[in-house]
Length: 334
Image (cartoon, rainbow, N blue to C red; front, top):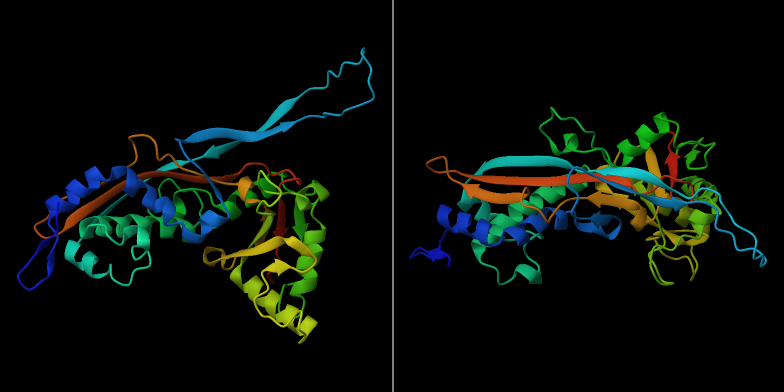
């Protein structure tokens, strides 16, 4: 339905337009919270079609080629080490003034791209609100702790750090198992290069050789850290290398000596006492996107305000916590 204009040229967004647009564009709008994760999509793998839980894991067992022997039979057990990727059903009911939301569209990075340039304003309003849900998910991607009685995004699911801490407590991530490294000094601008290098060297050979892709290019290894660590690393790197044609830069985003390891700083990781070295393939975000339980609708129960109603499945887990797939670093903070 076309947007209505007053004689003064002001957009008048009606409840009927919003409700119709929400119903007509349901599939596109349901994607917006996930697209609202923004930069995180470069470093995480999104799995769709997951309602509540799905078993993920990896094949385990020795597969060794030996000199030819027609009588040899290997009967060692082959197993799948399973992990459960949980997605939790969340909802939001938000009252809003449609014309106030409309005013916030201009200048918004969410709806100013080429993809929405020619989209009707009513759909832009809904897209903006749906994408805001994704921003909340991104900011709590690491520190969220599942609390079924909570009323915030941080209560919906267990985040990246929370899952790791639970596994550390259970003894499944440990120094002895080779998937935990404990720092003995606080990382700052005088030692970051040495400490991060020591951490990376503690990774298993299999992890360091990981190539997260089907071809030789892949995405390499990702070091998930607070932004403060990147700043400390850059300061220390610059002080260590000094001025030279080779090192004269201040935007170092790979670990010196490990060209396949790149930093991935996240604003939602500020204050975290854990860092993770892994691959995009191993970092799983679960959602549904396929069924009829997820929805975005607009209803009117007030003389001047409308209700934006959204439901969504969301969760996180590692595909594997084996040292060949993951190294967690426990930072010293005091």
